[in-house]
Image 1: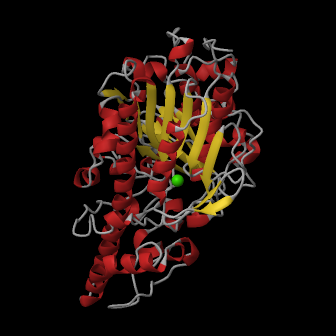
Image 2: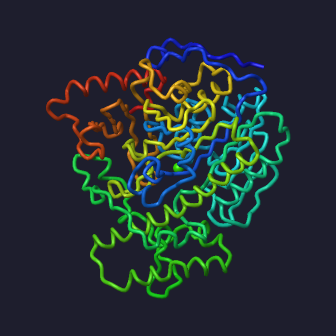
Image 3: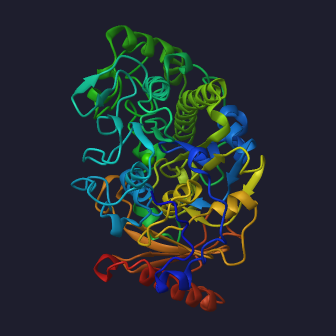
Amino acid sequence: MNILHKTSLGLASLSAVLPACAEERKHPAEDERPNIIFIMSDDHARQAISIYGHPIGQIAPTPHIDRIGKEGAVFYNNYCCNSISGPSRAAILTGKHSHKNGFMRNGNKGFDGSQQTLPKILQANGYETAIIGKWHLISKPTGFDHWMILNDQGDYYNPEFITENDTTRHLGYVTDLITQYCEEWLTKRKNPQKPFFLMMHHKAVHRNWVPAERHYRLYEHVSFPVPDNYFDTYEGRYAAQRQKMNIYRDMYEGHDLKMVAGIGSDSLLYDPWPHAFMGTMTSEEQQRFLEAYRERNDEFYAQKRSFKEVAEWKYQRYLQDYMACVASIDESVGEILDYLQRTGLDKNTIVIYTTDQGFYLGEHGWFDKRFMYEESFGMPMLMRWPGHIKPGTKVTGLTQNIDFAPTFLDMCGIRIPQDMQGVSFRRLVEDGKTPKDWRKSLYYHYYEFPGFHSVRAHFGVKMERYKLIYFYKEKIWELYDLKEDPSEMKNLYGKEGMEKITEQLKTELARLQEVYQVPPKLCR
Ligand code: CA
């Protein structure tokens, strides 16, 4: 068994730009290797996790998710490499950027499951591995002793699960089912003496935000703060002017906002995918759903509203449903943490909470993700590991989803393959500080254009204070000073006084593309 610790990155080009690997860390003894539960939801914004301190999270708190951060670490500068579902999942599995793992956009022909992945390496080193919930990589999972995945995006009510043997519809609410199946797998593991790696992947909080019945009315009277830039006019930002992910212009009124045709109506307004929404509910569930929204839907028609008032009404409906879906995830996390405590597994289990990328909760008027702006580029990340991570640790160094695989291997005392592009951030989280030689920049690349929501393809570099983005098909640059303009409203590219920093960022961007071996044909 290979439990050698990686002491250098091996690749000269990588070590030139990325941090030299950590000093030698203590390896867990064979019988003390930690278990890992990797809880990943979908599209869960940092703004909607109360420990991050955003006003939305304060109004609708997430005490159970917060517990992971309070008893462990909160990551404040964790980012994805490609802000969309499949590509982020592929990057997490491989520790590599999209162009290296081959899954650059949703709708690709399928993740190449024959390549090296984190679960395969763990499995080869004696771990029992499982994935339960959303997979979204088209091909069948590989490297798992047990897998049970949602069909495609998965449905909120009575979803289909795919296993090695069949595809079956299961009765229940998706978050609750995934929680139940994870607990059952933990309880009935084939080899309880082996350490385990469980990927618990929720469908929530993905569009179209259908809460559990017990949460339909949870936030119905709650008014969420409308972002200052909700009515952004996108001045100086070419791609932002051309997106189609605006809450008040592009959301589907029936499908997304649960709006009906008129007072007392049971007919939803525009819903292009009824088979994946009310169509999966039983007729009784459909009725209870319609009744739960009826009072509020009737009230919408009871008074005349201006365009601005309708736009703000839609924002409230979106947030009320989004946060009600978050509530089911929060309960699920509480249940798993209680389970670990009850069984004593908590002492030697690393628990991670994250999501596949960030999300817009009305900033710039948007829902969805894709852009390299902070709300979707940023990923929440909380991590608990008793005895290794001090409660209340704050990780502020730049970390990325390609780092997850090497970090987990490092924590399990398994050699990190030299071709992984991410690096272990174990020392940041264990020491609670960022070493001087840690990375100073991050690379991002979004490919999916043409595609849903019409966000132009772009790549970019983020450094501590500045961010440079290039929409390469249109040859348009954007530059932001995140200290002065955290909402990224003022494109400073080409402005007087910005010449020097622009050159520095362009040099860094070119260097990262070389280090990560991004083929030039993917950059034009
Ligand atoms: Ca997602």
